[in-house]
Image (tube, rainbow, N blue to C red; front, side):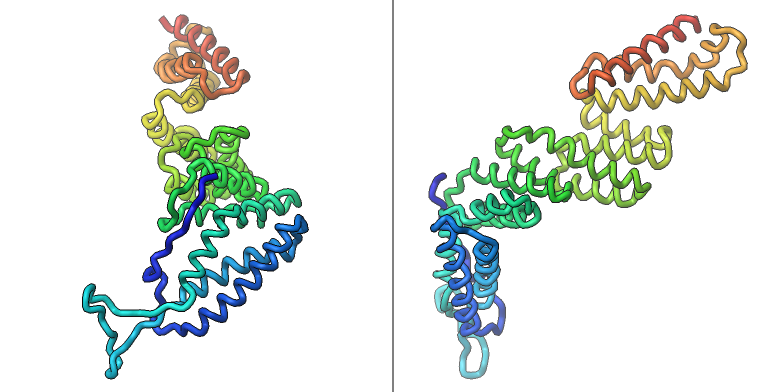
Length: 338
């Protein structure tokens, strides 16, 4: 991994009226917690206390940084201004040392080490937190010379831990970010596909459609380019109110990704269902008569099922066979209706 330095603009962490002595005290506690982690990690004896020490040190460093700025004032209490910049003058005590501490955490892969410690223990919740802190540091606007592949791998690891912590929303978001940065290993596409499905399956089983839609809206807001989310929105609408109510949502999803075989398959199956209902309601006594009764309903399912079969890019063999069987039957009705 390339060497990474973290440069923090101290002014962005200013808290008005803070006490610099508080920052020094917090910094001392942070150093103590970090040293506890570091000695155990370096000796190969990292344990729960050591792993918690890294997390504690990070939190304390952040708090110290946030209260480390003291503004200089004139005798009347007004802020003293810098003659060159016109900005309020201030002093700091430990900010420079905190910046170095963050740089050390990045350079030594401290949060990756702790993430691996928790992952080995199958404590995926704390593993996700550790990987998340590493990603935060690497993605900070103050970080320099970031190795993109390291960031991508960190996001994948965070998403992996999210998945097994059943935090599927953040799993999806982090996996997609990792893939956008070029990460393609470890079946990442399967996680990206399955995480939203896990959410929707749970909420649909509970008939909690409001929660399903809220989760999808959250994921869409984070990853608006993922077309499968729009298809899932249509699926939720179908589960909630039936296929006909979901048609506009499916149409919108297909407009975003017209070459998605699964979306076309869903539409074809839905329209086929309308044909089946019409067949069951027909009072015709012959197959030809039934075919004429449903003729006006045949074009849509034939169109979408034929497209799904043609594309065949993200449907299972079972779906493909089902589409072919339905298509063959619909075409027979089409021929009989002539």
